Image 1: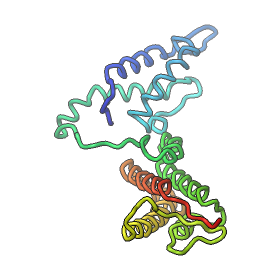
Image 2: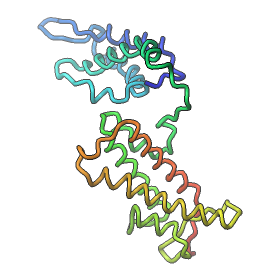
Image 3: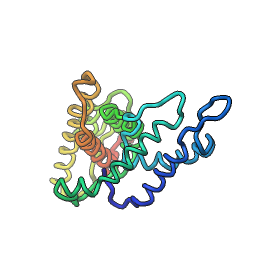
Image 4: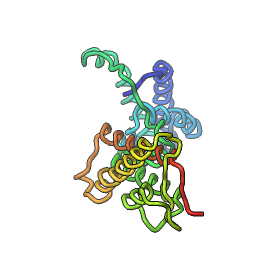
Length: 243
């Protein structure tokens, strides 16, 4: 749980308020409804869901829905998160203290990456989130080059090829790098890196059975970070096309 910059006191108050106000009460004829009423419960849910997204992103996959209790999943998630917050200080102490190393947020990746991955990630489908991000990067590269006839590894190789551009086959170059040797090294390295992203990140999650590619949070984030870096290099590259 990453709590840097989080107002935990406010979070606890909001979660406790939500749990209290959405408890079911019986009305007549025998219906069970949130204590605060459905309209207010919807309003309160819109406050706690961003909290879950920030501190408990897998909440939807770990808390089941109930057709007779509309806000059960959110209430269970709130109670779980409250327990984690309450024990956070002790757990950190027993595990040797907080890790104060630098953090990177998935939301700070290239805009394409988290936008594509967020929905699948929130439901616990991390390999699907990585696949969605890889597809978004491929589409981004196709759009920049104006090509739909090739994709992924082949597209990367053609985009960063040392060959001169041809009609319908523009290239990507790093013209802002003044040193020629460095410029060539950068082009070649990005070509290999981008091809590797599709071969080693996109292809396994797209072609293997789900049980063969179960990704931990850390490995999934590392893959998203790699795709993000490649997407940024695509943005930085200059389009070299035949007029």
